[in-house]
Image (cartoon, rainbow, N blue to C red; front, top):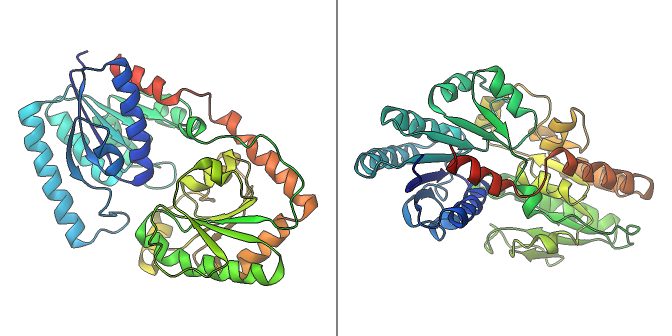
Length: 359
């Protein structure tokens, strides 16, 4: 199949990082391929033609009228662009809510769609699988149980491994936890999440500081975290995993960052808080017991979760103190490192590029 023109779309920060890495692998195999995209800053500087920024509008959960109107304009622009340029292939990365509209648009124009990184249809709204079966040529999944789920529902799917195993370095040595443990604080990457998480995380650090001689580092993608941090909390905006490897414990949201920490063998307390409206909406449709990927993969509570009304600084602090006790710490590290074997072997984006270019 021709690979002269490829269009790719990613709607959030973690998705577009994987999308940008995939584009680099496609270019290695097929340097002359023209690649256009919508996404964010990572894709903007990777592709040949960048059309629109949909990452930085932070369109998640219940959309505002402004976000809805903007995405409607983007979809209309894509319809005109596809009509004029007719890509040979379309790659969609996660972000179901908007991408399913692109998938139907592509079907109408007879453009094959490759979906990389499955929407979490196993967590809620399983009826979405039917729509994906109608529109997607191949679903390329990164969690081992997803392949069977899709195949059982008539979707051509393949598990390629998880791209994080190529991005996240494994901690090579673990000594006895020092008398001054380093606690990593992760408010999240989405503005709405940061708004709800920051006060809880800072208050948790304050409680811990009064009880143990710990160092605190907040990891953020933005120097403007959203507030003035206490002087005992350092800020790291480098995105350097080697700096992340130096922390002994993490307080983090349930998304990608929790799996990254697990792959580095970093014990953690997982927390998440939404607006009341979004929380009750999501709770009404969610079908799974856990929200942290490591707990979902294990089918049990490997890391404690503090969700919504349980996301209280005192509760989280007690969990941290319990987990860093010497008899609990190293067994947890070893348990977390075992997840690497579940997530495949290195070279994930290279395999994805080959699948897309050869189909």
